[in-house]
Length: 456
Image: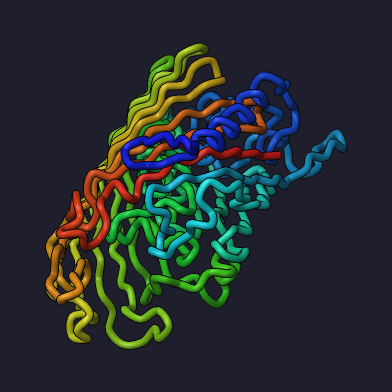
């Protein structure tokens, strides 16, 4: 008799699930502390917990945030005065198993053959180092499983030059930065690129629409400057263009889903306060992006997306208990200057709004428990978001999507992290349930993901 376990319509073979969980937790019991460090830990001589909350990537501590803002220049260069040499490269990887209620990938294609099957998702090589006392860089190249097949792409590229000024009692850190994604240079986990969930299964789906500021990773190249005054007030202005020509090293392997036209402004400002184990941020960010409607033919007029965002984060980091609360709100104004005349959208102007709130509790640098909620909504558009019946009737034309993420992480060593993540949807494409058997229930897209993350 075949027994199954149902979790919110997610059907899991009990035997296979229990075997996977047993293997993970046996490993938890047998693992010992390791001392191999990623490149920046080797450079500074500190363990991962110095920069990352409880050692859980990619959440940053106050020291980790300042290390990044100061251009990755703390610690030693490749070869110090005493002749010591550290290795400036590291390797990241992720493997796991995903169970999906109705297994489709992010493009809606069936991946039922991968349901519940162990997979190696990606392997990433990173170069991170202090070059001089005022110059540092961080670069990642990732080889990932695109289901099917493997593909290599640039992931993160961030190069910084910095200098400290002291005017009376005031400290001013001034920096110049070039990177390949608006907000990847940010140091808070409430900004778009670093928002929770930090990782998700390649078989998990997302909503039909997201703000443009979240969709330009590894396709754009930005140059800008920033200033941090008294380690409290931060100001930044940057400009982004398509990562082509000289900047192609920032977009290697990318096919440009969104091709930027000209230079596009990005801004960031915040106020932070740190006192003892507590820190608090309130900030704003934004981007005005002109994007060609056909990335394969980047000519003519472009659509314009203007994003306005606010964010906040609270953090309490004691030796045993660590709590982080974070959230952001993004309003996007959309001007379909090119797509409307081409008949690709139903309205000439529109908007999109998103809310992302989450929290994490970490215990003794060993366990972390996280939860998050996401809401995306905007104007209706039968061209962009249509769910159509076989008879041709439009069932839904709304981008409204609501979802939640629950996650447990186990830090085995400073190099190995285990994760169990459940993602659920309340609405997708405006629908909670299918209509007369047409389409998918929102809960059909729920996924349970078990994964192993390693970094050496």
